[in-house]
Length: 329
Image (cartoon, rainbow, N blue to C red; front, side, top):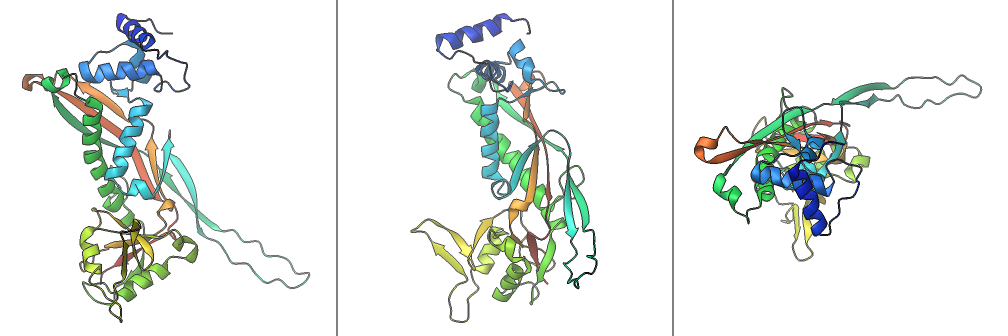
């Protein structure tokens, strides 16, 4: 056990007074002592031995479990792909086997040898790319007892990192960032008309995804594409959209939910403005806890303290059959 400093002792005494006796917990960043020490670190820069349990190699500290959950929830609000995809926590690179094609079954005459064929398999690797930002806060705000530094950081974190995450997950080139979905999905349909989309194009897109994946299928597009599609009418004048605000039912297009993603391209020749399929087969790998480093000296001349926030993550499409794209001619 580490030697207890005066500040460590003060934290434990305060918790006892509040009848919040620290209990042994399996996670080092889940204990009440670590939570309290971390709050003191953010607000005043105080460092005690309790924090060393969560120190990282870059001189920062892992955020407590409760704060981590707040950050993830804030990220989900900003990055829609986190809401509809599969998210896992990783500790190392994950190499996931993927079926590229399995041979069909064969009719075999009575007494004949059963042919043994091997399916074709590949793999995708979930690695870890670093995403970071610096948030500045004035000395006056930090000295204000009513100021919620965790909420302030969570809001800045979600807006900046969530936006950067979503952009990379849609169109990233795989260089120092995840490879985007638009570079992984196969084209399900090419529109009949140049620079436009019609109802038949959407139906072709839906049918390009195998039936087993269509059960949980959703459309992914931006606001401008939604506006384009809302103008499409069927032969009897009925809209292809279905809105039911009274029952609080999500908007659907040809019977499937629509998810708005600001990072998706607009409707234009050569663009891929719509994705459709089961996004549970798109895997997001979070590499452990987020980390925050307090920068006391760098911005001191301006009466500010900096907070350097970083995370490591990657994402890949695990099954190419699950999601298809619509490309505009």
